[in-house]
Image (tube, rainbow, N blue to C red; front, side, top):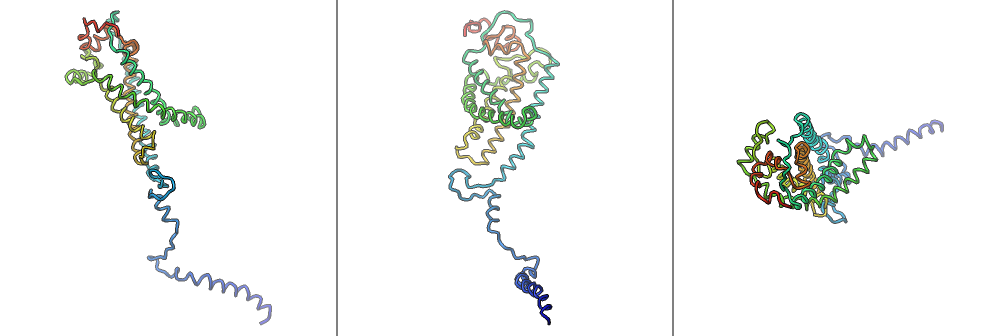
Amino acid sequence: MTPRHDRRLYPWGLLVILGVFLVVPLLPYALAEKDSPILVPNPGAELWRDARRAQAGTTQVAGVETGVLIDDGGERWRAYRSQWLTPYGASILGGVFGVLVLYLLMRGRIRIAGGRSGRTLRRHSRLVRGVHWFTALVFLILGLSGLTLLYGKWVLIPLLGPEGFAVTARVCKQVHNYSGPLFVVAIPLLFSVFLRDNRLDPKVDLNWLMRLGGHLGGRHPSAGKFNVGQKAWYWIAVLAGAVLCVSGLLLDFPNFGQGRGLMQLSHLFHTIAGVIILAFFLVHLYAVIAMEGVFEAMVKGRVDANWARQHHDLWYAKLDGNSDGEGPE
């Protein structure tokens, strides 16, 4: 064999040697049965598997669930909030608002029958009005900021742009968080001040409810100082307000020791209670706008005698001729 032929064999010989050293060690894997493959463990796979399962690890930061790196529950909560909670809440509020506007346009304002008499009765003291307006102010601040956080990206981004909405949302979040504890003060005050006149009277309240307060026509049903609609608004405000206070504190102060699951549950109850109380507030707002004489009762504390006789005849009969009814506050 000539030296030229020897030089041609060098590359082939090198490939054979590499094949022996590279291929032969892999033959056991290639010849292994498909049903029982040889698995090479990945040292990081188990770590990430536990992380995806929200398995707690160890961390230098002490606290509740600080060892949980990834929580799939957060993604499930986000999907539930965006697909169910937010759209259904919008449907409820939009539906109630639409019905009330339509009814107002069809019926118009409810005037005082026979006009004003010129004689007034004291209906609410300064304390009652003060508690009412304090609660109303805090509620409006929380309601508007909460609605902005819940629905603002659909309404405000087209108007303000992403950057403008980001600033608005940040301000609303701070306002909502810092105003929340004031609501914790307002709800117990509201409960205690209005409780006496909002106890249920089954016979009178059932009759008012069956006739829907006279909105179906006919003679206006009898009512005490507050009718059953106003009593329902009071109890909804107190009960839903209590849920908002408790859930809001859990969301506002995560250092209470609650974990992610409780925070997500608090967010759920907070949103549901908020939608319920806002829906009833729209009905309350309708009464203030549609019924002559309602607004001045909470501003001046006094109402016209004909208004009292028309809407709250049992209360009027109790005060008629009583000096306390027309006396100073």
